[in-house]
Length: 283
Image 1 (tube, one colour):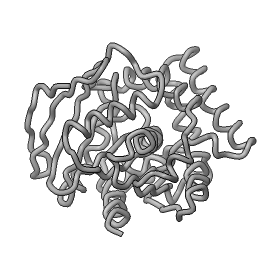
Image 2 (cartoon, one colour; image 1 turned 180 degrees about the vertical axis):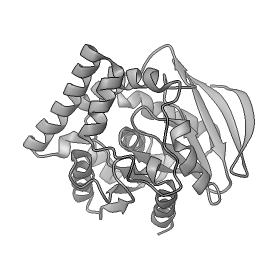
Image 3 (cartoon, one colour; image 1 turned 45 degrees about the vertical axis):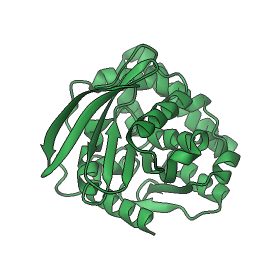
Image 4 (tube, one colour; image 1 turned 90 degrees about the horizontal axis):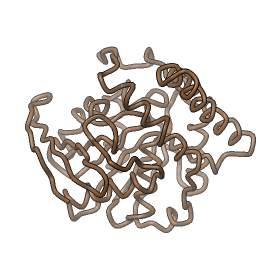
């Protein structure tokens, strides 16, 4: 493994160091900023470094914050797209190994939460504590709930094949009730970036089927030395990813932690999310 192309940029008065790490089958763009314990942010959906930037800036006063693009997204290229979440977890493991010999703190949301949990199962020595915000662990849902969740995901994939990425992502956002108006007052509207549709195609082609087929080893998670914190949005109690988080908390025998906003609270409530992360990891 080798890091290439290190660059520096001032973000919010702090220096962001950006580079690329070569891993088997891919080159991962990652960014590091701040000082303190290493905190990895694993974004959900088709998001990566850019979507996590406001949250990372709010956390850089206390942590060394690591963000990255999954293989195939934005600045991360791949010759072998991930077809399972274990590939993503192993990518993250190699990224952490490159940067620190110590166990890291991890915050993941949605697909990123499922990757974070798989990292904790497969590489437990690399994780000190993990906050898993609304991970789509569909295996834990009741049969009607699981049928609903998998049906929604399949419908989104079918919409993609029939109509394209943009209509499919609109359907997906409606299913999990993404509300851009549920945001902090100073958060500007998010305009789709130049990689929006290409990243969405990666999610819809490879990652969404991987979510549907993934089975989390909950027993191994219970035995992990890492502290595992299931979390969910204050305003997302009506959607199935929130139910997944609640069921995971029950399985682990730990309280469900609530975070500001809905399923994408880390994007629309970066300040409040950062404060909750500090509280949870500091407790």
